[in-house]
Amino acid sequence: MKKILFVINTLGLAGAEKALIELLRSIDPKKYRIDLFVLLNQGELIGEIPYYVNILNSDFDACPIHTAEGQRHLLGRSIKALLHRGTLFRCLAYIVSNLISMIKEHRVQCDKLLWKAIAQSLDPIKDTYDLAVAFVEGGSTYFVGRKVNAKKKVAWIHIAYGIAGYNKRLDEGIYDFYDRVYGVSEEVCDSFVNVYPEKAPIVNVFHNIVNVDAIKKRSLEDAGFDDNFEGIRILSVGRLVAQKAYEVSIDAIKILKDRGIKLRYYILGEGNRREALEEYIEKLGLSDTVLLYGNRLNPYPYIRQSDIFLHASKYEGKSIAIQEARILGKPIIVSDCEGNREQIRDGIDGVVCDFAAEGIAEALSRLISDESFREALGNNAGVRILGELDKAEEIRGLLELV
Image 1 (cartoon, rainbow, N blue to C red):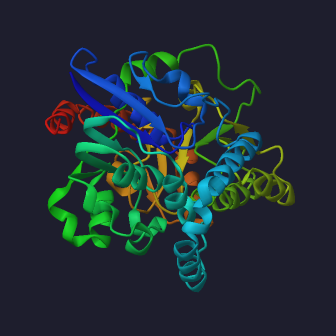
Image 2: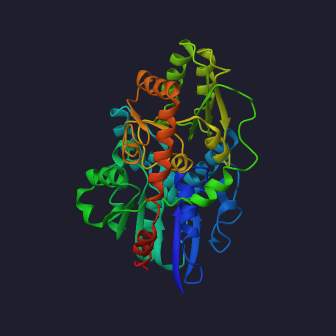
Image 3: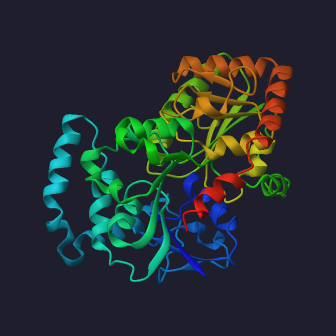
């Protein structure tokens, strides 16, 4: 039986992790032995992994990744890894040189700075695989490249690579170990090739796999909003991190509230920006209008019950949250950035707006005032996505490497 290894950084509630779970569910366990290794040994989605997948981690911590407690657990694991066998000392020159470069560029990103050292601290996996897959950028890519024996290796890219802060200096030639690189959209592939033009021949698109029937079924479960609000419900789903820049969307909500529009803005997600966002919401006097609902393992009733789905961020790869909202026939507003443009046709199955409070407010105002337009966008989104979700050919392409 052929052996496949998947490696991912964590198993927190986020798009790449959900995409991995659906991919694992799409591989026949009668034909392949599937192993999974989670670099930082933590994440609440561990219970969603198919029963036939062999998890290599011992004493896995199911604590949610993006809560304050989860972040403390994750920090402890990261520090332990960096101190293991003098890893921090051995990687000090790499860390310092890249930190200096980040400071010069006014963009210090500690996670990207430390992923290589964390991967370096871990013991190699002793088994030899027919195929090894690094399913997300950073740590898993560095680990599979240098710490895994495999006949073929594949790396996955979920974000606009250069815009997100990755570069050749950080990677130190790691993609030379890979036979293929998959991007989750055309724009993601283009972004990677802009950084690595020499790798263009091995770069292919592999769209996220989503389970339409399961999403529709779970959206009808007895859950969702319980605040009896009768105005317009606007919903975002995503981590509370700098990339999402929720302050901009909150400013847009402030503009509309000041115009007397009856609305509420709900955000499903957790992250290291929660405290700052809470303070900002209170400062603007929006505590009764902007509600941080935290993580929900089943966000689909909330999506189904919302009037408008808002996804305005600095950059994206290919947001699974947008795909889920399209499946449920929601009118969607997205910011004009990589990843979003590929999913939404402006004025046909959604609205693409400038990433600015005024632009978002104008798009929201347009949809709020025109119910028939909202309905048309939602209907078009639901119809169009059904033609995009057959990934059988892409899965065959992956498994042909085995």
